[in-house]
Structure formats: structure tokens, C-alpha cells
Image 1 (cartoon, one colour):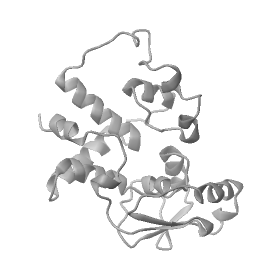
Image 2 (tube, rainbow, N blue to C red):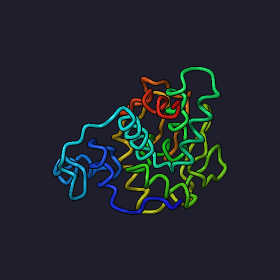
Image 3 (cartoon, rainbow, N blue to C red):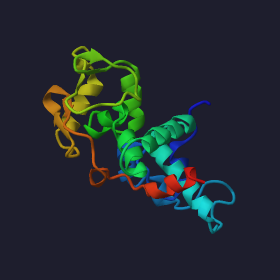
Image 4 (cartoon, rainbow, N blue to C red):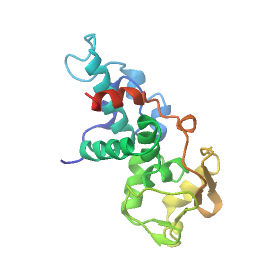
Amino acid sequence: MARYTDSTCRLCRREGVKLFLKGDRCYSDKCAVSRRAYAPGQHGQRRKKLSEYGLQLREKQKARRIYGVLERQFRNYYVKASRQKGVTGENLLVLLERRLDNVVYRLGFADSRAEARTLVRHGHFTVNGRKVNIPSYLTRPGEVIAVRPKSKESPRFKEIAAAAAHRTVPAWLRTNPADLEGEVLAFPTRDQIDANIQEHLIVELYSR
């Protein structure tokens, strides 16, 4: 399956909430959800009452789009989460948060998860000193994520370093914006994940 390449603002409008897929634009007056708070398409302004299944499906799609994960990947994460101890829905969100592209975004080294995914793929980051170009790499406590020395000299990363100094990172991470590196201190807990997702609806969908 090919990755979605159409307008990302349409995804936010389809879900009816800001998914923060375009970085600073989502906080400005240019945000599509603020300007047109209805679904895209010629029938977008019609009110539709969703069924129980529809609510569950929309929640799953919202989670997929927030983290930029394809359908098969997302299903695999759910299967893995269901086999772990604890609450399946929370396990699922923890797995998604541990992805390297998400950690790079959370550390403030990218304006969006999409940009973080691109930077990781292009080999700009290391984990414990080893280059990792796999966005889905699952980070662990104690691992240090850093920008490669050669990449630090690029104009884009100089902008990122200046912006990262003013960003707040979650408690399960520690960042050093001056050196463009951060550390995973622990696995995130549910209260440390600020994604607006009702994970129990996703579990109900896959439990059908």
C-alpha cells in the first residue's frame, strides 16, 4: 500500500480535530480546521450520526494519521500490544510513542512527525552513536538520540537547535538542544501521552 500523498489538512478536516500534522501551521490562522470545520468533499457539511462501529473506526483512523502509520503496521502494533502485560490500549499508545520518528518529534528536533520521519530516513540521526534510518525503530530507556555531526552544520538543523531550546519535552525524555541530542529516560505512561485518542474504542474495533 502506498503512503498517503494528498493534502494533509484534509485528514484533520475528515477527523474533525487538529492532528497537528503540519507543525507551526496548525497553530496559526491558516489551519484548515479553524477555517473550514467540516469534512472535505461536496457532502462534507452534511451532519452524519455515526454508528458505534463508525466511532471506533474514526478513532483508529485518527490514531493512524497522528502517528503516520499504515494500516498493516498499525494492526501489527495492536497485535503486539495485546500480547503484552497490562492494558492493551495503553500498550498500543506506548509502542507508537516509542517509534524513533515520534521521539525525534517529541524532542523538538522536527516541526512535525512527517518531517521527523524524513530526517530519520535520510540518516541524520544516531542511536547510541550508531546511525539508524528506520523511523519505526522502537527506542528503549537509556538510549541517546542525537543528530549526526555532519548534519549539525546544515542551515535546517541550526534553525531546529534554536527552536528546540524553547520547546517543552515530555517527562520521559531529556533533551540537550545545544548539542542536538536527547535521551529516553523511561517508557512513557498514559498520562504522559498528550495525544487526543480514546484507545478503548480502537481495542473494541479490533475485538469485534
